Length: 341
Length: 274
Image 1: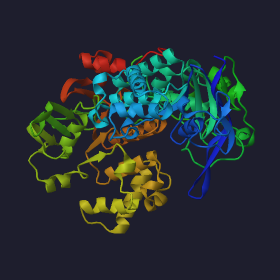
Image 2: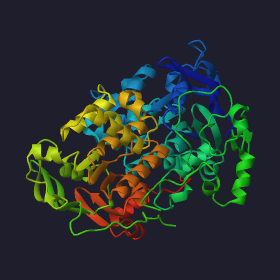
Image 3: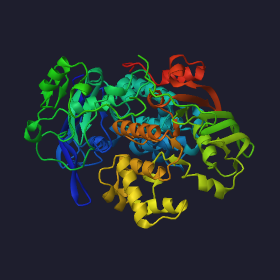
Image 4: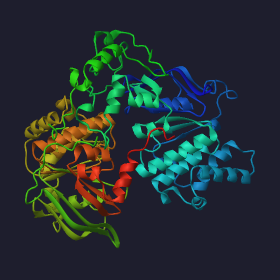
């Protein structure tokens, strides 16, 4: 997978929030290859959706560029990426679909816009094919969104997104509003579409299971910066950055005991961006004076796995001397779960 | 390794904090709940799990007397510490809600009033169940905010919900729910809208609060991970019926109902399937 479908090149975006400037995205570089799914994880406000919008050309970065198949969005109309080659699926299909349009009309619309040269019949055939790809049966063609279940609505959104046969799709929390069983079927559909068409996905999700099943690689975003990136299994099973470790160990499962396993950060995230030092400084249980001012560069860990942390060697030492970091490190604490003592 | 259930055993007394027995709920001719029975003991957290439309939220609404229009409990009993809740007037229920039992919302940002300051909302909670001086309310509110882990109660009291993050707003909503020291906390997906790390903090907080005053807690969630880690016992619902109930550790280790097994497998997909 060497051919890049989407490339973000040192992208930065700052918003003004109540008179303060907030860096939503800070010097982010990412590449998504043809047929690849890159998972983007991080908390609310970490900049995930802004990155998705920048990739789609919906938000212009202050600095850096988003390039679709090597074409930046900033080029002249003739030379910039074409809308039909990219699309996006949102979290809430109930809001994303036009309530006054039938399923058929919703899926036909992008085809009518981008394939004006096609006959009505060709357009309709493509729309029906898109619905089939999303596993929506023909008898729903005349239905309105409010006559569909949440899962069916999201399938219609997916059909609409693939209608123009795009080569890149941003999936922004595509299954967050769905029940677990429906979620799995939908993810299987998305995987099948990718296998058949070679489309690339930027998958934004806070659900580690969704990421684990769908993503080939994962990038972890904290306050607009990528703190860790690598193959999915590596990042989820052997996270190296303290933030990634905190995030992943916070996930509650039915099979893993909780108690001491959660690496708890100090305090709460803030919007204020420090100009220097590590983005996690002030919250990290492993921090040191260097972290406040030092320059934090991405460090290669091998196997396409990299992280931006100055204290890796220290953390590794602590890890090897004490089995459980959460117990060994000053500043971390087991959850206060009072029913467990 | 299976999940550790909460270590402290709740005391199941003769009269539980909350008891539902054989509850049916109808909206007109449509039956939404079929013979639902749930007991919550003092200091016990009971989780209700199920997918959309299983009746888990409807069960909670039946307890609060907040069924949708034309919805009513058509059979069964609901008792709060041995006292029947059904057949009470709206006014009688209002006096109980917020005082002896209170609800923690799913979406605190939406549940809090956007145009009133947090302090002003505490004042209306105070006024709903008694007479209190403003300064008294303010002191109590600040204490509660500190108790739920808010560092700067004075600032939060003066702010509006729009200025708070989701996690902070949920702490505020929990502090409000505690104002009158309820025996029973009802929480409908209290952490669904929050990030995983914030979810852990809020659930830890709820567990602490329930344990310290031996409060009963009924926690509605679709997340089996939440149940496994925070609930002493669990109730699995499907299509308005209870399909399985028992001690959490036992149900998770050896689920009897096919539907429970399905939920469990749906929650643990294999990696790399794509």
